[in-house]
Image 1 (cartoon, rainbow, N blue to C red):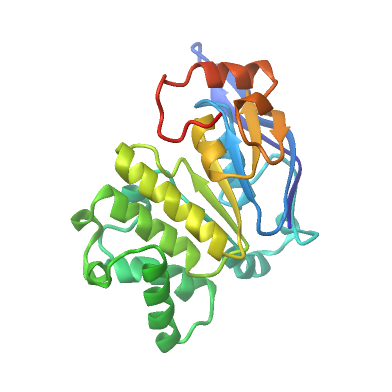
Image 2 (image 1 turned 30 degrees about the horizontal axis):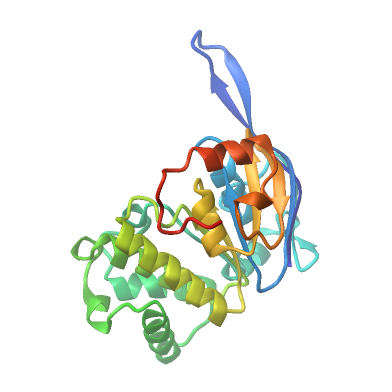
Length: 262
């Protein structure tokens, strides 16, 4: 179980006159994520959802608050202990192209977390890479290519395989279908749904689209101006949302959408 308690993130910035100001990107957020469940965090750009996601996987350190993994505060861990824990929480970044080293073959990009976060033997590495490539429906022939030789959908699959290969307890997908055409978008969403059924991981999907959240997750939290304004368990349709901001997000959806529910 992952639990965030009173997480806050404050950034120092400069105003138009060059004066130092402070921006609260995330404000006293408390959330819990049960084992083998899927969650979505919904909000507009600038709502703080990606900042919160980066804190949950320890890419970014909060200004205040705690993150508990199975009851233990990972923010209080020393560097060696935290490094060993990093295999347990992984993130699939929004921009697949920039997330991958352009000099590395696909095989090495997928194997890299195994090499740095685990003590996997070479023979086991080959087996695990082949298994996750098959799991995300990535043809074996592509493992020897460079990132620029792959399509956008294939790059997303590589990033998902890279996160899956260390069998994490907690996976975060940050806007993982943005920028894809409708057909590829649906394929990636269906792949994530399939992985959710097969995996022991807890999934958190970050999105600005309530349609996608309803399609992909069991439980939904809505974020505005750094705060969680609504949480819904077992969300099934638009009628489950009552907060004014959630209703505004629904009303701003395009008239027709493949994943629209309710």
